[in-house]
Length: 103
Image 1 (tube, one colour):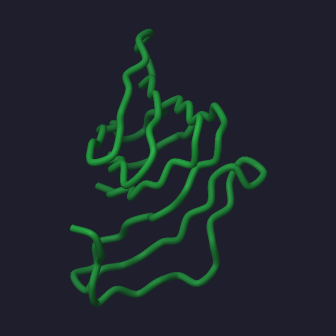
Image 2 (cartoon, rainbow, N blue to C red; image 1 turned 180 degrees about the vertical axis):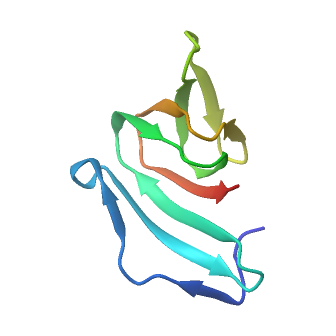
């Protein structure tokens, strides 16, 4: 799916890591919440409260989930799952566009 229809968009951006990650929260008609954003080249650590599915829209990244030693690569059209109350390291070498699906 290339777009979300019939959504509410929170106008104020979420800006993390001194602007290395910028996203907007969208809420679908059924109440489902998602975050759509871009991560600029960096290596960052994100914490999760609820389970997340990170969908790669454009670009690529390397990811290491909390407790794992190996990095895994993801590209356009791929996604990875992150447990709730956890964290992941992400390394981005080019602008990485994503959709984060919560819960």
